[in-house]
Amino acid sequence: ALPILGFFVSYGPVMVYANDKQTLLSKTNEDKILVETDGPVRFSRCFEMKQAQIDFIPSVIFCASKILNKPYDEMVSILEKNSTKFLGI
Image (cartoon, rainbow, N blue to C red; front, top):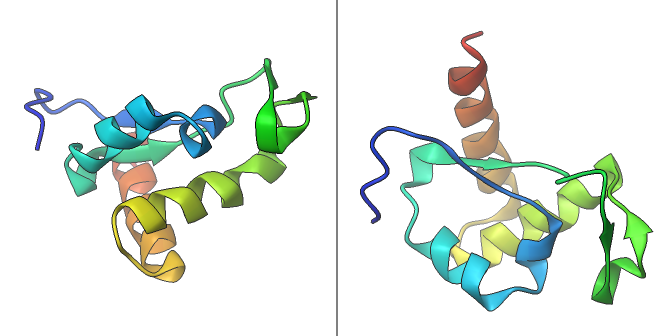
């Protein structure tokens, strides 16, 4: 895992098709991963040049679950726990 000095690392829709982001995710501590829409920008490829929207998040989570070899529901639980920790709630 990467030494990230306690920082969280957030992944957006580009991670779905960017090998460098996928590699970074695979090296990020599981308890420091977050996801986001990365807006407002437009995304090519599988997102058909649409502007970032909350509807992209399930695709980001699905991709992360495949990269980390976790069931989708487990990835959602990890992200919920991390988000709660990050937001201090």
